[in-house]
Image 1 (cartoon, rainbow, N blue to C red):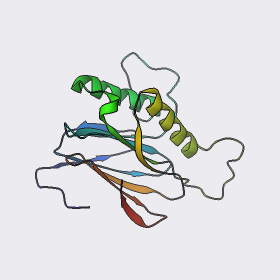
Image 2: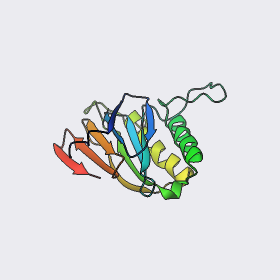
Image 3: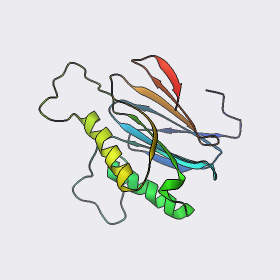
Length: 168
């Protein structure tokens, strides 16, 4: 991963946050059981990242109120950005990361764990909205550091339990 050009704005996403920007942006986050979805438009050099914590939305939502903690709301936030930019899901390269087990050794056999549900929900929502997944790094144990350079579409991921740095 290269040093960002001096004019680039760096954004760090906390759990539940969302950001969509232009070529002058680098977006970072750290994931455990949470999931990040990254969208990049290779012609317009725009894109964004969400960092959702939970697969489903809360029971009550006021009209127009979206909460990036939830996968379905985060996807609706992306869809709003696409509508504003006049783009379509098929125009984007899509990558998904996270869903790591933070408590290895705990028995989750009775039902899918939160990380597994987060990943499964992400796949379902991407398909539902017409996106095609290009790359992913999910599951396992430990956490991931994710860096997305919007100006060129590179996503760098370091999965700490694996110790490797990869460009997705």
